[in-house]
Image (cartoon, rainbow, N blue to C red; front, side):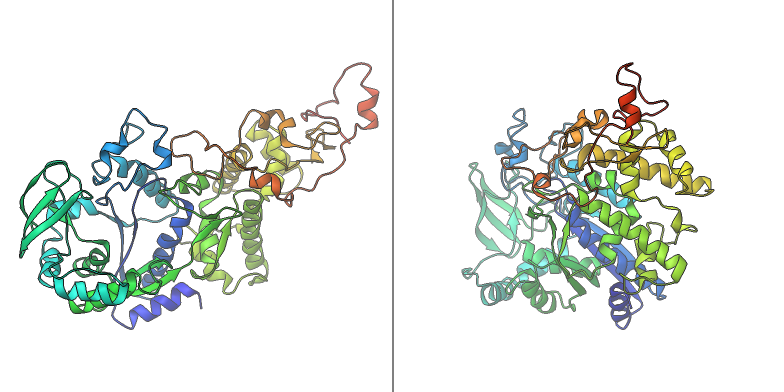
Length: 518
């Protein structure tokens, strides 16, 4: 049984109606690693429905979190003094691109677009709207009323040293709008006296909409309570001893009177050779950038084939070819043999990999991404690539829908060559338009820049480029340190036919390759 079905079965033993929640703080480019939380939760959401239960999927954007510092990727935007905005909710901080409503919207919007492409359609809840609308009012009142209980939990479980009288509330200065520079000097229930470094002193009521927010360790179980959350996946950092989960459970039980939701702990996704991704540091690969080169069903497949607690390294270079071809191979094996040598429960893995939730009618009509990479490196025009694929017998008659998918594969392959393809990949011994094997590099050449269609582009760095330009690298590219596995090099030599034309300067007839046939 697939892991999502096991988790759904456990949930349904507790009841037939469920609310599953997921979310992220949009403090920077939201990377592909963040998809693991969303896709884990969404897979369980699908499984609950498949087993006859009722399920609602929520995506909560933590847009009321403060801007904690001037992140490195913001230094390229001196026109906005982000130091002046540190401590403000990211829902009010200006967007660095000047186009979106706020800093938070700048990074949340493209991520939600990526979710839609993956077939994920959650109900959206934005934290700043929840606080400013008064949705947290009862949860805030309960937290303040049980302040000593919460203080004891945080001191005992998380090793905090909070003094008696501590109030579980972060007030927002009514004058400068910051959280980080404001402190509570006295309290009487929800009536608070506050002081801010901007010079403001005065009082506010914590129950007023937008007056402030709960600390994260209290906000999390409060959210479970008023949103009715019954399942949530979260990263291993929250599951560490004394971490957010260990404090959220007793707060949920003792303060809000609810049982903690079902849950699944997931392992972080690492970029091969680079380590864990981080939105705020701008490291990793943005989810929408990955979808420019990866079919959505293949990206879902990456997460559906492994249990969430399994370590996974994502390689957008040659490893992406392995991933795409592995998906195609599994689809073909399932269609032809009803099983797969590489997957447990392959039919369910592949079903959950489909954005639509339905298996394609003719899954074996795919063409290897490796083969497409060779063809795209030769042919500028998509029609020429399609003609070559038909001529070589890689595809038979296809429907309009299947041809549309193939065209999409071709465009994604073209984008991969222009962005993530390794520097040392050599696309050699490719079939030219003349039907012979042609090289894409001249004699003695050892790199991809010799192909005129790829020499014009600069490969994107592993680091996220939130505003379009690649991040500078201080060390050699991981690509150049890795042995080329995707396309093995071959000697490049002029053919006898090509040598016979050297005196006349004529190129081989009808061959579109830049270099001669072999």
